[in-house]
Length: 262
Image (tube, rainbow, N blue to C red):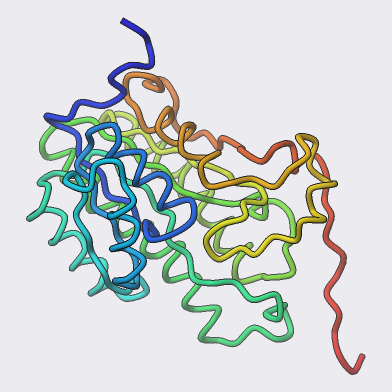
């Protein structure tokens, strides 16, 4: 039998993917149902969730949830929906993140934009991880969590609300991995580069900074995500940050932001 056959156990595995309506989250959620994993597709808009499920290789393995993860009530409702639909979650992917606007530099970002970015990226990621982990620990069942962080957890992006929240999420991966490892729950980060999908509108000229010569696609992340999530392939991997960027992290291409009137 090939090592990469049967990455998951359809009889016991179930997944929850936030941000599953578009971009990287969508690609990962679709890949999971393609492997026969019952998966909750969670996002903030009904139309994008419906489209993501309809475009999946196995729509019958997908369940939708639409709501706002910036609120604790939204997170609680998502967990309730997941429990009813698929039972115990064994694989959690946190890809949800509010849209980014290039105008929101340090002197322009509003309090609401700052708070919402942190609430979705960090607070929701922590709350959902903790509650899913508690359920797994009680059942003495292993699990695997994957957080979508960013190259800008380590280097400025001119969007402080985004980069600082991703930096917090990156440390949260390490904290959870250290705490939960003894219970057989692995926690890792997937670190995308310039992926032309979801909320990121990539300038094609950026490709000149990428050693592999092109912008990334959501589909470039999905195979790695499956491998890291799989307890059969990555059983000894936790607390890791796996970079999938075509080599973009070998350089930093950002200039300081323009500040009108100064």
